Length: 67
Image (cartoon, rainbow, N blue to C red; front, top):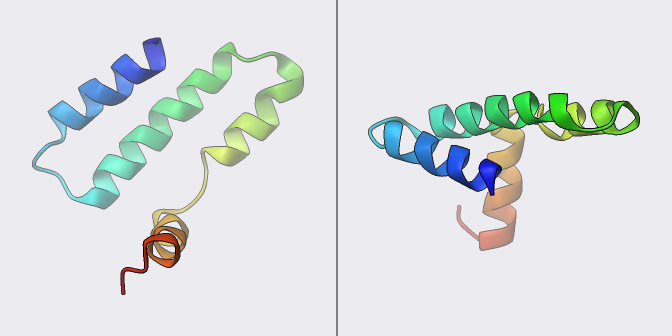
């Protein structure tokens, strides 16, 4: 629930920002959340939170068919 609240706040605060800025803010928050996972899962958590925006956008476009 905490994570959903944080993401919601980020969206509200960054309403005028670009999609890339919003994505990077969410990823930063996700990396901070990695500090609360067990040590054995930390590296995997951080890795999931380090995907560059350009890679995310390519994957998103491939899924939704947006060119």
